Length: 58
Image 1 (spheres, rainbow, N blue to C red):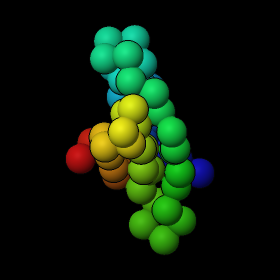
Image 2: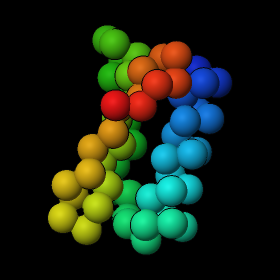
Image 3: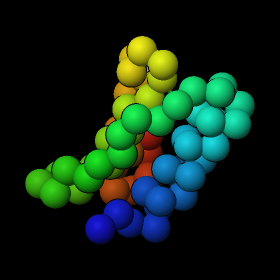
Image 4: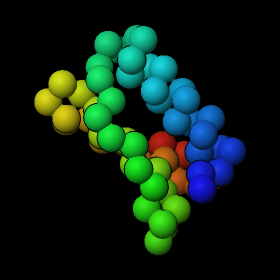
C-alpha cells in the first residue's frame, strides 16, 4: 500500500505528465519488497519515475 507522501507525489507526476506534457501513462506499480512506486510513461515508454516511501521522485 502506498504511503500518503507517495500518493501526493504520484498525483503531481501524473498531472504534469498528462495535463502539462500530454504524455500517456502506461504502468503504475508497487514493488512490495522495497515499497517503491514505479511509473512508466511516454509515447515510446521512455519516461520512467520511481517514487520512494518518503515521496521523493527519481
